[in-house]
Image 1 (spheres, rainbow, N blue to C red):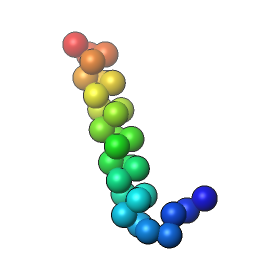
Image 2 (image 1 turned 180 degrees about the horizontal axis):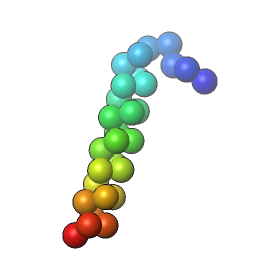
Image 3 (image 1 turned 120 degrees about the vertical axis):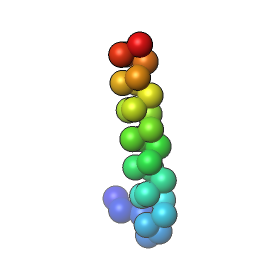
Length: 29
């Protein structure tokens, strides 16, 4: 299940990382 365009993978990974970071910040606060 690998997208033909690497851009899609990069965006997905970025969103995933961002969401995780947000969750961590919220949890810390």
